[in-house]
Image (cartoon, rainbow, N blue to C red; front, side, top):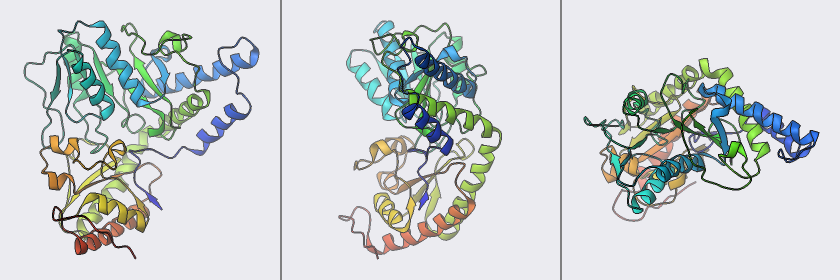
Amino acid sequence: MIYLDNAATTKPSAKVIRAMNVYLEEHWQNPSSGYRASKEVSKAIEEARASVAELIGALPEEVFFTSGGTESNNTALFSVDSMLPKKVRFSTSQIEHSAILRPMERIAESGREVEFLPVNEGGRLIIPENFSTGLMSLMWANNETGILQPIQEVAEQCRKQKVPFHTDAVQVVGKQKISVRETPIDMLSISGHKLHGPKGVGALFVRSGFRMRPHLFGGGQEAGKRSGTENVAGIIGMGVAAREALARIDTVEKQISNVRDAFEAKVLELVSGAEVNGDLAHRLPTHSHISFDSCEAEGLVILLDEYGVQCSSGSACMTGKQQPSHVQMAMGFSEIRAKSSLRFTFSHESTLEEAIKAAELVKKAVDKLRSVQSIGTGPVVIYTS
């Protein structure tokens, strides 16, 4: 099986699994208890916190652990919402993950004006000439296309206007160097399972001195920012994943992009009517988003799975839903083209041999699908041998 769906989730590394097992089998004590064994568990959590902080250029005390990217995003948005007058407008982009769009819609229902800013055909934010808002939340890299947003420029504008700036950095952390010191960010969301750590754990960076209101209340864990007994094994695993990501950060971007580029070149050579989407000068090395003329994406996903390639037609959160991707529609795609696009996402474990083989299997799947179906003329029928 060739796994090319790393934007949906990554395989936990062997070191991550071993480290987690230690804290499931041996050091399973509650870190808030008073005896020595619990204090050792608490110390391990702080070491993991320091590792996550180092990966993004933060201080350890600026990082607190959550259940994942969704909770981190929700906490950031609802925290600011609870502290600012309702007359203050919030802004985000039209291409955000649902973990931003749904909370923003709920905030709008409560009476606050929320502005959903457009993107250009390459998938990058069109920054308003008269930039005025009370909160800006902009994803660092899009989960479907991998297109990088103008984070530095937007963050600097927000800092000049003393506007809180949050970024959903779930897709970018661990894949390229970032620094919350060099980029004036107030809050930043991370997910453990996107950087070869476990699912069910994430983190939110909150810049020192930035006011935030907790989203969960209880025992006051995580310095009062996120109550609830810590997911110790998950946190330890995320800490190990962060250390491993930092160790390869200087070489991983070039390594992955070489494999991705070879895959795209082979697909474009073999498959007529294939087109790589988005601003190719501003994208993650991990992502390849391709449209296939006269092919229905969901059918391709099924065929490719039969042939041994795992990929997706968009965000994993939207799988099985019939409407076209909101990201692609915001980029100006026709509905037919939006429903004809696949996302292939790579990791440092992806090999050149796998990339070439996957491209050949893409051709096989496209040829088969084109022979049996036509978009928009009726139900799709897939025949597999």
